[in-house]
Amino acid sequence: MSVAILVRTAALLAAFTAPAGAASIQASQPGAAEARAFVQSFYGWYLSRPDEHREDEVLARTQDFEPRLLQDLGKVWNEHLEPGDGLDFDVFTACQEVPKQFLPGAVALKNGRATVAIRAVAPGFADPWPAFDLELEAKDGRWRIYDIHYHDTKTGLRRLLAKILRNGAQARQP
Image (cartoon, rainbow, N blue to C red; front, side):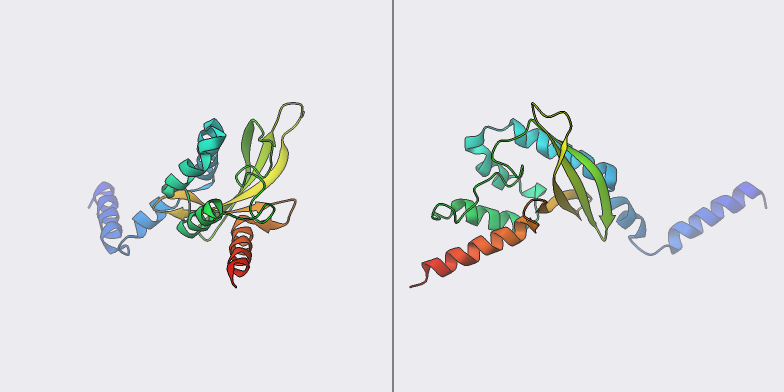
């Protein structure tokens, strides 16, 4: 038997004896490069939108968000809260004055999630500064936003939304 036939036979045996779906599972997990590309694409889109329509357009981009996060964000945006009880900043930029660009930095991958360090670039500043960490989760071979961890408040968007919704529900009780 020639070496070429042995190599082909071994390849066929490996293909037929591998656990079902093993190749597709590995191929469907996006990596650090895809996480950076997702961040660049999302912020390229987000920063190009007019302020007055951003919330509705974000809520329509279901493929880019973990469903519960998007649901809670929509509830908070649509609730008629007293001033100071809601969100007084842009949750995706972590500021009131939006920088001109956001850059993905270091990416940490763990258990189907990616944490991407986001740096902001603004006119008048020499260097980008650390703004927040964007936590992504892998779903159907692509990344989507799971949470945003703000450096200045040491909290995440999910926790902040839960607190606002809990406080709003308590305020409505007689």
